[in-house]
Length: 437
Image 1 (tube, one colour):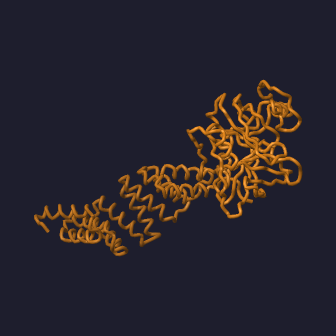
Image 2 (image 1 turned 180 degrees about the vertical axis):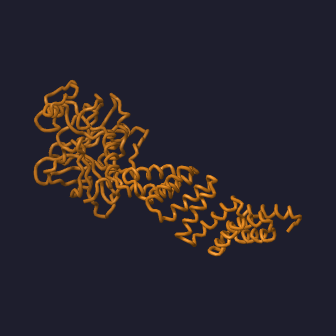
Image 3 (image 1 turned 90 degrees about the horizontal axis):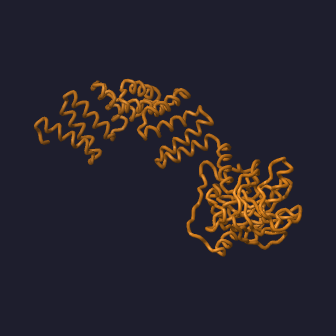
């Protein structure tokens, strides 16, 4: 079974509320809906329902949203798309507190090419707004498309919240309720009377009474003259994202953080790492990567805290010691930085970057001879490290070993001819010595 949060929206790829400003004609909306609406058949009993394709994270499957009461657990379900192809349901998620369900099916070519309907923002729906509903009434294979008007906005059980006057029939439950720009703002569900009956069975308050024109018959959804109710699409979005986040493993958030880090979106990376830590707080790699992200934002004290956490969990992880040393150096705590670098070198003696920064820290402490020794080790391991040659020159300069300092600057410039810092420092030293070259 495919974990459902991989085909619905997840914390990795949050569904955005698509906002289209241009109004469409009813004909355009009907055509758009027709490409995405799905007929839900019961292979083992009479009846049918409606669903529609929605955006999903996993493009290897197609995602269909409907009402939960349309897909009872006892039913053997089949899905029929607008090209008349029949699909078996590969997996289904029924929401416990809302009359919603999400299904997937696997297309033959391994990629879902069917169009998903754009999801709007149901919080922006107003009384009197024009809406359109589409679905398969009764036992008909012909799709019905009907207009309506929003008549009431409220908060009822099972997630119901938008009521509208429209001509519908049994079989259309689970279909999309669309606004004037072709966005889904609700999932069509039950009639006012059906909700009233449910409320009576549960001992709950019935929905607000609206003026109905005819008496409904006994078939679900067939109350032609009564007001209908739908589940606002924001309920679906909120619930899916919430449950997807609950189902996500800390490794998912870790990978998400690494993705944002690779995009240089460090704030988002930190937020993802924090979510991973909130689920599992003893992963040294998460703490380390969080520290690196904070370091990139020049938040060195916070980075230091993260590196310390990583070290407490895995004391022999040299990269965490390295990060700790760098943060301490940036905070001008050079003696402490040296202790961190020494720890790294005890684990990984040939870490040339550590030897470079060890030398820089020693230079700041005016321990020039020791700094030169570190630079010598760094350039032995990596002869083309122009920074090590340049900083070696600075320490030699401080020891008034000017000829050797100039030779180090020359070496840095030969490796990186556009190394302006080395060029300017060499020029200034020559000027002090009264030399032009």
